[in-house]
Amino acid sequence: MPSEPRQRTPFLAEPNRLAVFTAVVCVLSVGAAVVSFAKGYWIGAIWVLLAGLSSNMTWFYVRRSRAARREEQGPAAG
Image (cartoon, rainbow, N blue to C red; front, side, top):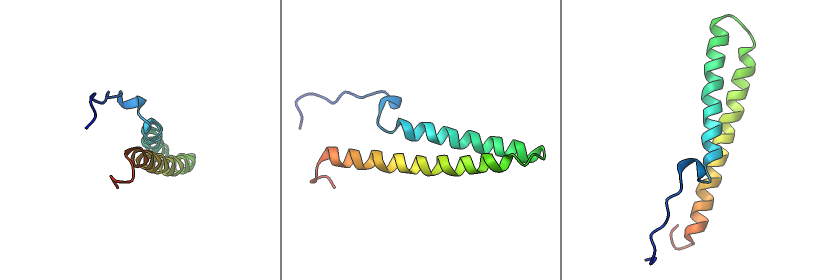
C-alpha cells in the first residue's frame, strides 16, 4: 500500500479526455444529422459520416486510455 493517498485528478484532466470530446462530437453530429434529414436536406449524410468517424475515434481513445492504465498498474494487476 502506498504511504500517500493518490491525488484524484479532475475528470477532463484524465487521459481519456479526448474520448469524452469525441463522444460529444459524435452525439452532436447525430443530432445535426437528424435535424438535417427531418428538414429534407441531404447534407445530413455528411453529418452521419462525421458521427461514424468520431465514434471510431472515441473507441480508439477509450481503448488507449485503458491500456495505459493497465500498463501503469503493472503486470501483476492484469
